Image (cartoon, rainbow, N blue to C red; front, side, top):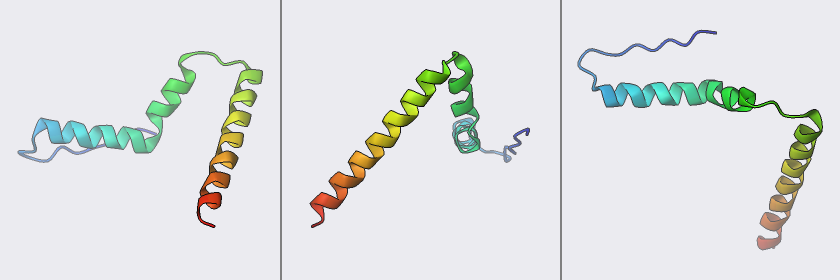
Amino acid sequence: MPLKMRVHDREPIALALRRFKKLLERSGIQKELRKRKYYEKPCEARRRAELRRLSSIRKARQGTAGKK
């Protein structure tokens, strides 16, 4: 999917660049490029996903413990 962005007349280049970076970030292209830069073994991907899942559980427990 091609991204399109219009640069308005008399818009500063810095502002247009900032909008473009936000557009890239929201589209997920940068995330995908970083992910595909190096090959990751399937076992490493599963391990990383499991660690991410455990971390979120741990954070949720800490958040609920402080609210009691």
